[in-house]
Length: 137
Ligand code: AMP
Ligand code: ZN
Image (cartoon, rainbow, N blue to C red):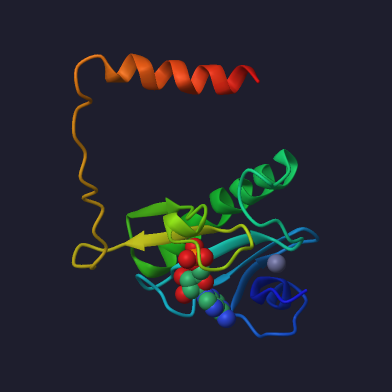
């Protein structure tokens, strides 16, 4: 398969691995937002988060819990953002599901000030209904 992360999983493209087991791999992002920016993925190919089986997602999040304290301790960071870019419109470039662990530093350049605003009057109930209807299908 012509997938960059499948090639990393197969060892065909080198990566700075931090963790590996039969099903999961974590490695340093080569174009980091901050020092220690780490990607956690299943070795098997799933395009995005909703496609990925529950058991694998659980193993990915377990890897995040195992690795994140070491990343923080090793690099002197006190906090991290855990990010999933799910789908092209959300900024997903590599269509092989992965979590980003981004350690934070006081003077880093990550901006998490996503603009938010209140719903117009009555809109929040409509939005809730639409989602709950879809959930019932
Ligand atoms: P996303 O936009 O969520 O699909 O993230 C893909 C990430 O993969 C980006 O942060 C890239 O910097 C990173 N990336 C691309 N190629 C490689 C590579 N060969 N090794 C490690 N990370 C990579
Ligand atoms: Zn893949």
